[in-house]
Length: 178
Image (tube, rainbow, N blue to C red; front, side):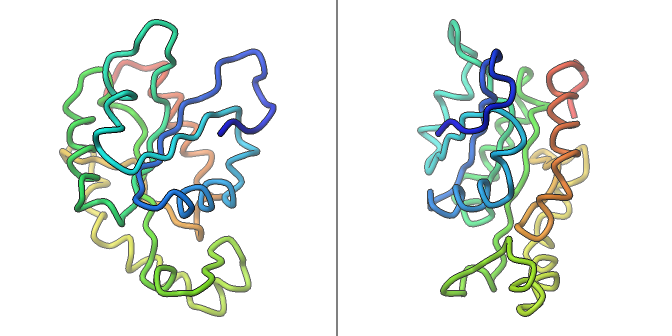
């Protein structure tokens, strides 16, 4: 899906979201005001086989991947393997990769409203978000074979936009991996 009118003359950024549920990824990204950041193509990927088209050496006139989100719900079903593969690849080693950690409270809620400030306060979202992020804390260390640039949820995405853009700039303009 293509959104936003920023950077009209440029090729849209290529953002991949690896999740087993397309609606969750779309809701997270669009509710997190992704549409206001830049011109992008968001590709929802639900299996490792579909990822190959984006991660292999860039074909003629194909823009390289700019950003990857991996849902914690697929971490043990190929997500960690994917990130390890990316970090071992010379041309993708510095690709900004973020884990989107859906907390158990969100997963069990009938109508999770992670972007709603009142819902987050009423459901003690901060507590559940911190619990969901704990298993990935070691992945934030730069030398980790499945290094993550950050852990996101609806609770903190708006505060991470600058960091995400800075990591993309580092990836585009600097040759130093991670």
